[in-house]
Length: 113
Length: 115
Figure 1 (cartoon, rainbow over the protein chains, first blue to last red):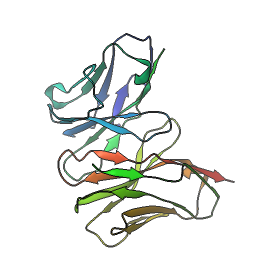
Figure 2: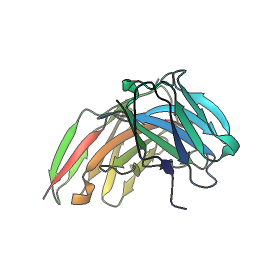
Figure 3: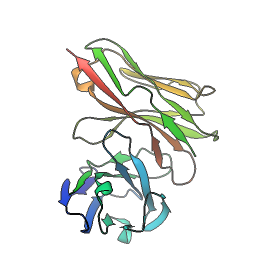
Figure 4: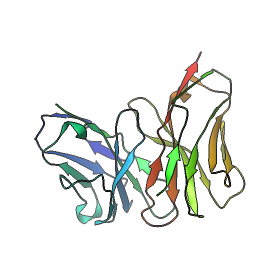
């Protein structure tokens, strides 16, 4: 197992286009998190899955954002009608259970032009 | 809501010297965890050290140690014998012991190691 994997690493898109990112957590990790990190800031929580259930969403997650985790394995984060303000690093993290360490992927850097 | 504040945007230290990064947090919870994460340029976030709030003893991991002052809501990171590979962004983070256990991060401190 090579850790949390995110794809793509970089994405440049035109304003108004839809984009989708993928996260593959560490095998058997049942908790999966998405965070957004803008330049010079700490990551901010977006959403959380326990297995396939999306249990918490931040107010940062507008209705243009949707996340899924079918079958409790990989997860996708889709942004519809992208805006320049969506430009950021999108980080995925996974953990095994309560009170265990979260492992991060290398992130997907989105640039909206 | 919980907040985490890192008041030092940038710090620098001479190689082999000791540096301390500051962090304060605000919470009304009694049961929580605190972390320091390291984010090297273009690389993933990795955990440096963690502290359980119910433990009075400060956590240590090799050259890294913390000064946890629960009453003052302060959680500083001390790096001893600084090495060039320690250069990175360092983030202090809070995590509740309940619920989603999402991480709440500070703004980060960029640490530069001078050879």
